[in-house]
Every structure is written in structure tokens, then in C-alpha cells.
Amino acid sequence: MKRSLPVLMLAFAVTLQVGMASANNLLVNPGFEDPVTYDGPPFVGFWEAFSAGAGSGAGNTNTLPLSGAQHLEMVINGVASSFAGVFQQVAINPSLDVTFSGFGASLLESGGSEVRFEWFDATETALGGTPNLVPVLGTTYTPFSYTATPPAGAVFARAVYAIQSFGGPVNQQVYLDDLSVTQVPEPATALLALVALAPLGLRRR
Ligand SMILES: [Ca+2]
Ligand SMILES: [Ca+2]
Image (cartoon, rainbow, N blue to C red; front, side):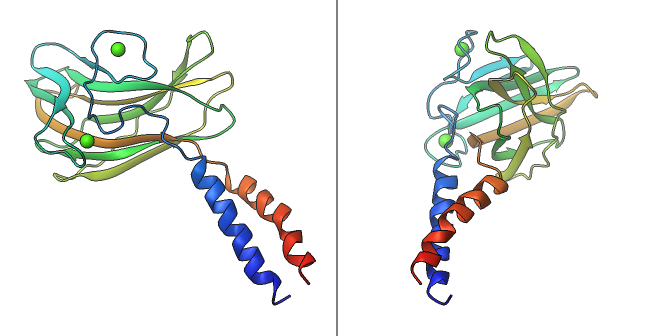
């Protein structure tokens, strides 16, 4: 049994590698080094920015990137019932959970950020969305992460990050950088892979 332990550890390491390899970032332009778009579809392969108009906006800037030369800035300048944000749509494996994570900084009044997934079927018909996660951001870059289970029939997930002032006028300035959307096998799947590799260790005896 002594000899099988290192092999089991190797098998576990291989399993971890497989898991990490499948956790590729599904987003294009995750660090906002290329301009976001304001021109409608396609929403796969591009960030689409949106805002309520005067006194709000979202766009690339180079004020305080977490990495690279640029990041995203969203602002609401003292306007009530306003909003601004970005989204990007990715093709997903509907049998795996989806995680939207990244880093944000809130430089002025806090609160009012919303992170969510919106789901679409193969014909891009909307299937509803998740409740909003309200990330608590510091004034320096703070990690956030939101994991959700796709509903039946969903083959696209739209990752949305928005700020809003539906509760009254606020001055918001939120930065985002290094975002990711990933899908990783469930622990049960990784465990099955480990069990499948375990006989390699026993054979060594
Ligand atoms: Ca960047
Ligand atoms: Ca676009």
C-alpha cells in the first residue's frame, strides 16, 4: 500500500490539472484592453455597454487598471433611477454550473452594484435570469464571484454587471477589471476520475 500512495497523489494531481484545464475563461476581452461596444448584437465575443443616458455611462479608461493598460469605468452622476453597465454572452455547457467573477472597486458611494446571469436558449430566446448578487466592493479592487446553475434549455449565459440608482440620486463610480466566466466539473466528477485512476496505484504492488 505504501507505493500506491504517491501514485494516488499523482492521479489526484492529474485530476486537478484536468479540472483547471476545463476552467478556461469563456469571456473575450476579460481585462477591457479592447473597447467595449455600444452597437447591439452580436453579444458573443464582445462586451456590450449600456446606460440610461445623461448622467450615466460605461466605457474603457486607463485611470486605474488592475492589469494591462485599461479597465472599465461605470458612472452615475447624482441622477436618480439611472443605470449603467456591461454584459457579454457566452456559450455554455448547460449541465455545469457557471461562475462569473472578477475584481471591482467602488470609489464613491457604495451599493447599487448588481451582478447576474441572464439565460438564453439556442434561438437566443430569453429564459429569465438569476437574482442579483450585490457585491460589497472596497475603494480598491475587491474580488467578487457569483455561481449559478443554468435552467433547462439554456445554451447561452449573459454575464451582466450593472450599477443603478433606483433608490435615489447617488454619485457612483465603479471600476471593473480581469473578469471571468468559467465552468468547472463538479467535485463528484473529479472524484470519479480519481477512482478511475486508483487501480493504477494498486497494479504497482
Ligand atoms: Ca485591464
Ligand atoms: Ca456589440
